[in-house]
Amino acid sequence: MSDDKNSTKKSDTGHVWDDNLRELTNQPPRWWMISLYLSIAWVVVYFVLYPSIPLVSSYTKGIMGWTQIKEYKEDLQAVEEIRAPFENRMKTMSAAEILADNELSAYTVRSAKVLFGDRCSPCHGTGGAGNPGYPVLADDDWLYGGKVDNIQQTITMGRKGAMPGFAATATDQEISDLAKHVIALSKGSEHEAGKTLYMTKGCAACHGMDAKGVQFMGSANLTDAIWRFTPGNEESVKYTILHGINNPADKESRIAVMPTFKEQLSETEIKKLAVYVHKLGGGQ
Image: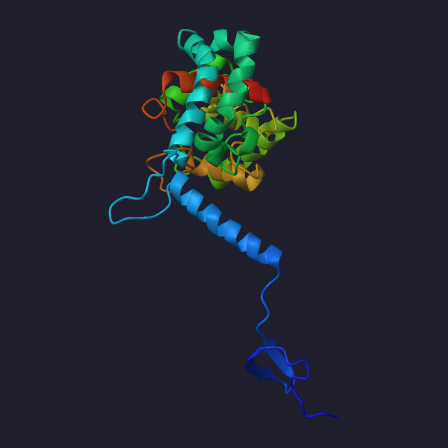
């Protein structure tokens, strides 16, 4: 075999690997060089047309004067022009009137979806499906009423119901009997000892003689199987009876507070949310 490492006699850089791999000095293909020069030209054109080079306290603006913020504002203005006729009408209408207007109602559901996601879904879940310790908004169970005006009032003013604890006024057996009665009510039956206690311990004063709740007080309907605090078993019910809800005298009391959005949202935004929540499926 010949020891000549450059039998083709082509020009190379002198770099050799593995005894016979040489780096030649051939020019790249013409198409590759054309692409390189075109890309360089495009960079120059881009730098002239668009904002590109950072300076000490600013940047080169480009002769087109384009910026992402400017484009965003132009697009936002176009969207707001489309929304304006609907938004202007809503300002002078009540939530009930908006709900009754099919066109406005459909617009509200679409436009309030993001608002609900930002303001409501962290507690009430996506689509109002609820979260542990927070009410479901997509059922037909409403402590303060499910009419759109009730919902608007709730969003505007917030809600903070209260239930006293019975740890100091009832025995363990009485607490157990009351819990059994509440569980039985949710299944369409009764617990005799618990039923008597329900009347004598003052439960009926808040939850009603029929145990279906009193709307203006925000007391729960005990005859359905919808539980404000999961899992809704006997131990969970006993805990609520023992410690109450929003009971300042008991550090172990359950906390159930709906904040007010009066200062955080505009009147129109609140009306939108009221309509949206009502349309989730649980409005009356």
